[in-house]
Length: 85
View 1 (cartoon, rainbow, N blue to C red):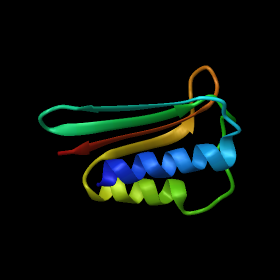
View 2 (view 1 turned 30 degrees about the horizontal axis):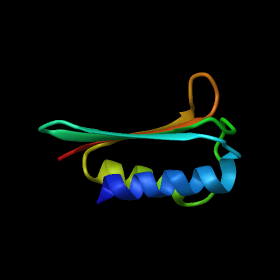
View 3 (view 1 turned 135 degrees about the vertical axis):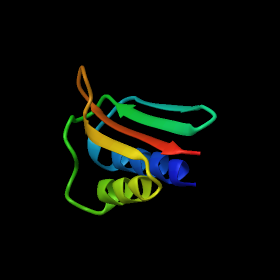
View 4 (view 1 turned 90 degrees about the vertical axis):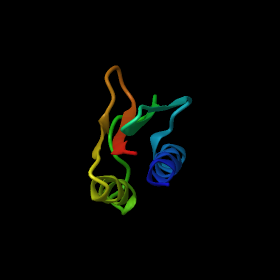
């Protein structure tokens, strides 16, 4: 559920703030973890300060996972999370 919510929030942020024309969502999993990445080609900075990114970070790290959000290589913005299964 945390992976779903991270993707949902990252897509919402892309639509509201990024001005992107493209967004790629990648979900991968292994026996012990699941990884999600949402990378857009819009603005490469966070939108207005709110609860979105911090809420994702709290949800993922509460499960013992890792979370990053920031400029993507080559432009755009990337949200990445890895969580134990």
